[in-house]
Image (tube, rainbow, N blue to C red; front, side):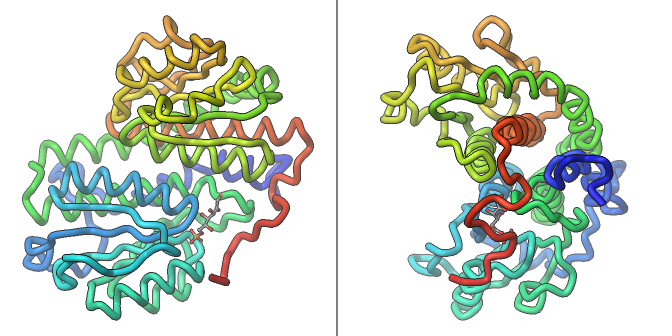
Length: 363
Ligand code: F6R
């Protein structure tokens, strides 16, 4: 049932190109620069929208952070991601003009459902982005968009993160076109990147051997740091979460600029640093932070596209194909593989990490 893979997690990492094709199938009209999601969000409502809030936990929260950046950029609306267990609907927001989007793979996460109830009680319009047909969240919201990733068995979310971000990007295009905040040419560009996403992810998967070697070389680090800016920042958080979940190693992810405001004190030659150096992630600025850690002797692995001449600055480059704003999402696939191989060489229980459950139904 694992299709020849040693773990479900590795199988699911490899299923990403297929999952992504399913996420976009029949939903894109690239010629017109439009998206069809069978969403009942009237243009009138979207035009009066002042704010979009993504509520989620864990990996889904990181997908929400990625989406919030895309919404601010394309839909020209205030957008934020909030950790569901911290969420309150307060402070100067108009419920009628606030769209609350619950991002949840399982559709059963108690923290997310309870945050959603707070938003509904306040009178906000709600949307669910989920993988699970018939899940509790779909009964609680005004509208649902399915990510169509197929079942995910590994406790660590991999393909569903990728499909969440891709689906949220579709929603961003839909909302932006209805609001008239992007032209059909701009929409076409993002949609063509979305179409290119499965192929780009496949290219990363084809470079798996390289990642495995890097994991062998650096897997014994005292701690691992993941850094990135803008769309690379949620990917850094996600990279660190994945590594700590399945390898039990200490890992931290943060926006690259924060390094010098504290975490730099922990950096030594025994703390590998993984950096997102792509389009959409302010790669040139992040290179400054790469230099800061290198001068403390830290080995640096950069997931980089052509936007920077990464070879000159880092110890190891994982090549990310050109894909505009989706490049950081592709870089994340390298992080998934890196975590997998670090954990695997330590013999960890990858599909069922200690203390964790796939669906967290308690608050
Ligand atoms: C991490 C992971 C968790 C979930 C979180 C939310 O690999 O799987 O952090 O992302 O528990 O779960 P859902 O998306 O089902 O609400």
